[in-house]
Length: 356
Image 1 (tube, rainbow, N blue to C red):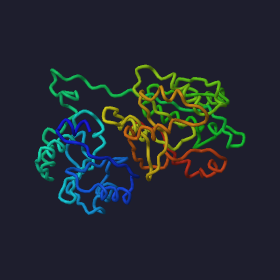
Image 2 (image 1 turned 180 degrees about the vertical axis):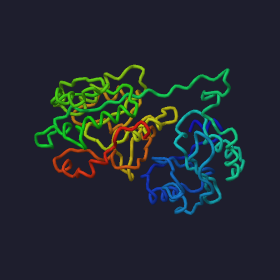
Image 3 (image 1 turned 60 degrees about the vertical axis):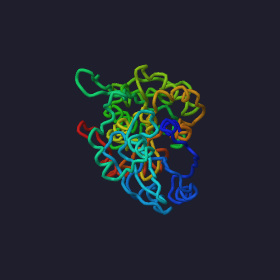
């Protein structure tokens, strides 16, 4: 609304629906023919077969162009319906800072036709992350060295393994190492600064399984009260200079360091990516990266639940990051799930690799 009003336009209506083709196509039909139709999805548009372009075509519209050589703003869609322009918005449209969406919106509201070739020409000067108003100006005499975000990793390793029927699953042998050691080594390899391990149940044995690793141990005396107590204990140890925390589970040995780095690379609160969650085949998994702005709310958690509810409360700040493997969906909770780790599968568990 603020963007439109600043350009002399008016937001005449808003509707919400499931991020699925049929419901969205129905809402597009109900919208009639406004001067400009804007569609913001629950996740970025991946290709021309994705939900937003498919729904636009199902509602009788056309996709004229997808993608633009402007950063941020690469995943913008330009279409038409009933002779009126339609924009499928990139994630950066959530940011108040100028981005590729503004370049197209300003032209359309000025009555200037935007064609595919116009968008392609925007590649000249399209590095908007470097313009003074963002600000990361080019030119050595004015530029300041951008600082990569500092991301702490919290590995939750305090649980009682109740579903295992007795043994502590974190100490189970997985490919020649205790399960928890694999999870912690992955966090270290990914560059967690620092890696904080929350201990509770059988803390001496779990700490011994991590012997020699450069981690920061913290003990949660209330571990029996549920996962939230361990999460809050870990957050309290995150250094003040950290921009975010990656919340890892000690019973997910298939997660790869490269996947954690992908989550860190997606993190950019300025562009609306303040919570980064891995997905596989459309399913959300773990670990999840949270910006510092959520730490206070996370300290209010209770019981055996984590902070996943924040994904529903702040959908505009969530970035889904698709992964190539099932590790982000696979945790080991029961004797049966541990037994399913056949020897040949254990041999292919991710090994620490500096070149991954």
